[in-house]
Image (tube, rainbow, N blue to C red):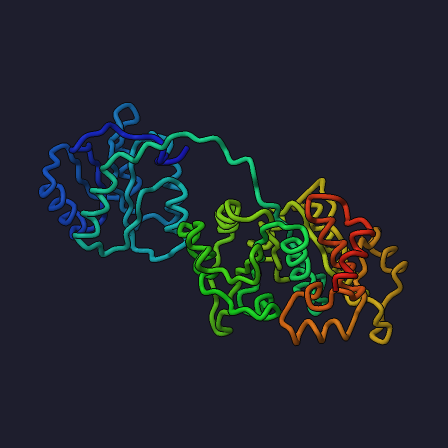
Length: 407
């Protein structure tokens, strides 16, 4: 049970019933001054924290507004969760405390707390928080749920250097230009990602902020953070300092994908190989997943491990396995049959290595199918994109011939 539900309004009154429990004398004096200035006569102000509030609050006659000092509790989230058992959703809760942890703030808000203020609390800040919390939340009109969700396609490399970003860029370009789908490309490697670099784009400056502060995510915010490479293709990426350590919130994946739903038909995600909480959450959310490998011994081992993980994260789905840069026998390639026997399944697509196409792609700053349309690698990338487009399993050969003639 949440402490407060924003769709539930408390009784509209200019003088709410306030119960406040704060640990120190200075904070209690601040609350007393605020209550006097607002003229709230129906207020109880006591010493203590969550435990004192739990003993005082009467479930049969709960307050409309609750101010709690969580400084004295080693596990405030669990204690607040227990307090929720006796507080109805209509009770609006403001908390204060000594911790300056952004994750604590977010988790409190997720529980339904209206606000959290770091002590020592300024008079003006606490005054504004209590006034805002005393106002009934705006009633929202129920609307029909959205019928469209952007198709999420996640790509991850079996090891570094297999060309996952090249494959992701090629798929994204084909979906936008040849399948006429509004496509967002997301590079979640904030420090070493080169999706924007490969497409000759400047990385945006909003991705890190979105992932650290998911409450700020909306369509307008993302629009300003994305770079454009065509009428239907947009890229969301970053290039953070190497001596920095971004504190990303894995739950940010959900509002990020929801915000992209409104403007895009599909989202192509280039994942780093760290397999952190965010990567795992996105793999679990993705409608389609692609494991990119080469035919090396290391890629054979890690392809098998990744495919096994994906059956756990997304049971009932079958990831695509794409072998990239094939035909490089001088680099100790394993035979396809041996590779497939070892991992216990077939490779879905083989993209041949083409040094000339790769050089042209790098010189022009374009996706491979755009820079080297007639190459065999581009033709195979088109087949992969068609399989992921949600349309036909793959383009008919007559269409492939027409694309080659246009090149």
